[in-house]
Length: 420
Image (cartoon, rainbow, N blue to C red; front, side, top):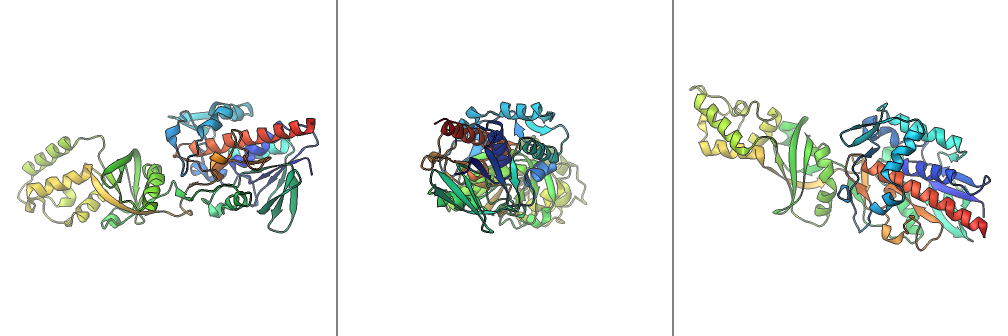
């Protein structure tokens, strides 16, 4: 069996795994082989953070992550911490800076991070084979054979699966890793898109297409509040989007998959109380002359006019209707919708619109070094695992930290084997 550590998938997790293995390789003749299905490594890195690469966060906590099963990402950070991750880049000449808790390369270019991986992998003499999609894996002796789609086979003592998930199919992500993990008898949970938009049956949504505003959004399981987030909300013909919605997409999708009655309640003026809005409306109604304003004008300066149109239409009113023709209670009912606009959620965007995949290989079948308990010498990392995080650098942090853990452990395990 070849003295080879094979890494399948050259995204953030795979690049870090290959580098970590190379930096800890037990002997100069140990080959580190990085196999990538696309024509270039780091394709998904290059588009992350709208091309700016929000690579980490100053605050990494359990509540920033989800799992379909019972996978816990925090032990990974005990083996390779976010602080070590930042030091990894800084020691190699990449300056970092923060916006709040969000960590970016000082260049604000994702290409900086992808380029660093390319440079360091070449420096560490990692053999990279692109346009090599792996379709099969089997045991042979004390090692493994991975089989490419074109029939080529690669033998290795250690294999690291870092194939990513199903999000980003235009970047070559097809969920190959789930099939490979299944061939090795590992448990794969149900998967679904996360960090994506939410579909609704809101009749007035077309009136608000393209609206971007700051809002507080609460997710409900029937009458029980599940989670609340605040941030940028985007309204489109397709549904509700924006970072605030992405943060709610995993628990919303989980509720929908269980057949639960799923709603969000939107506060379009989170920094203003209902009482303040009510006083303002009452003052306006006192001042309006006989040629009183239309409903579309009544909420001027309070919320985005597109959001106001959606609220008015959803209430069955006409924007051109004169305000004085409504009973004061009708006006106050409309005003209430500014603070608590209720929308039923009917589904989520697909993988083509998602940033990450929820679900994956259960970590309950892995050791603290992310080695399969039932398959010695087989390691798994990154989005392939049943861990997904919120927006804010959490997913890249887990991908790269888990890759570092796998690479180092695989190299150390081979060193122990060589010493026998």
